[in-house]
Image (cartoon, rainbow, N blue to C red):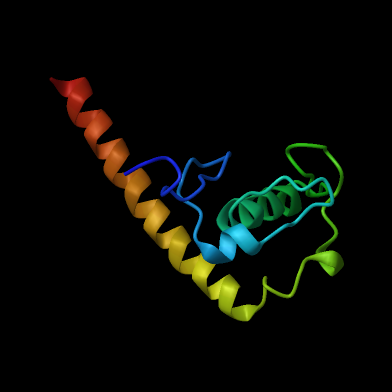
Length: 102
């Protein structure tokens, strides 16, 4: 597959960005991340009583200006993706532990 056929990757998690992710533009600076990473940034910030900041320009994300593409369907998609990422992370951790034992 040529690089022009490949989907862009999220610069944070290095996972392939789907069509919803590619339409999602959470910051004015144009830095694109996947919905899953965007939610993680918000969850970590909320847990620490901090503002969620764009990793590129460090401006606070404004939830009110997020495009309508980040609607309930996109959020459900992100939740499904989160489960998939958790499984991948668990599988990777298991492989790493197995390699460490060898």
